[in-house]
Image (cartoon, rainbow, N blue to C red; front, side, top):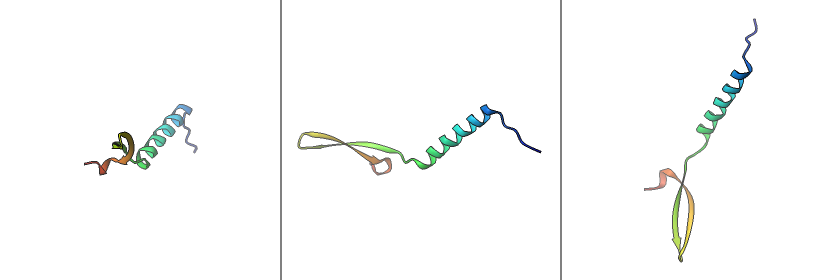
Length: 51
C-alpha cells in the first residue's frame, strides 16, 4: 500500500518545515545605538541583554 501526496501538499509541507526550522534556530537580534566621539554606531546585540 503506497501513500500518495499531492504536489501542492509537498510544497506546503516543505514551506512549513523551513519556516519552523528558521524559527527554532535563529536568535532574535536587536540594535543598540552607541555614540563615540560624535559618531553614532549601530551595534547588533541579543535582545535579552538590553535593559
